Image 1 (cartoon, rainbow, N blue to C red):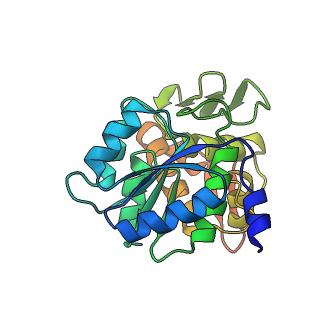
Image 2: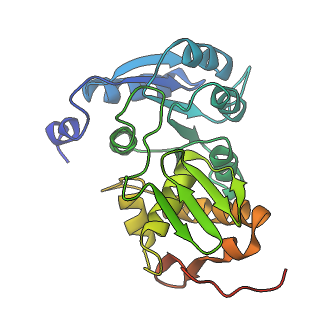
Length: 253
């Protein structure tokens, strides 16, 4: 892909991004590529400085390293989520599922493992920003297909972004909500992981399929805490992907 095409894939209006990594080399590399794509960049070398900057400024996105001195990325993201919902992309040298789950549990929107392609970072940044157009530090609602989606055992109020399972509230991260809303908008339809990455994460070129699997796993776990039947509505169709059953078979708990 040419530099011109790469630059054209980003937003026209300058967006402000905070790059957080304890390695100066990585910060310089990301700054070079992101500024070339017309993003405005601030830097932080540890989680403590990053948290202070993120609370004082309205960033459109934060690229946040997981392992850092002073305060790691998980703790920084946890503290930030108490005040803001600025989109976060986790950067880390660790690719194990546990680390991905930790990032997603504190509300990370994406996760990329080092070593990474800087051009892939730029494309993923563009994809996240396409989903978060209405104001800095806030998350867009999912597509307003309907104000309320209702199925047996499961309901979504899209105005308040509230999910209930058998009448009990389910606390989801923004991306878990978007995924559930997408599946629930077309019940009984099978979606491949590549399609979910394209439609929910807006990835046209790059994307780790494990991102979908991890989000589905977390979504099921959270639903199961309130309703085992609601959790079983999200079905794995082996070799094809996932679907949400409109009428699951109820089993005794």
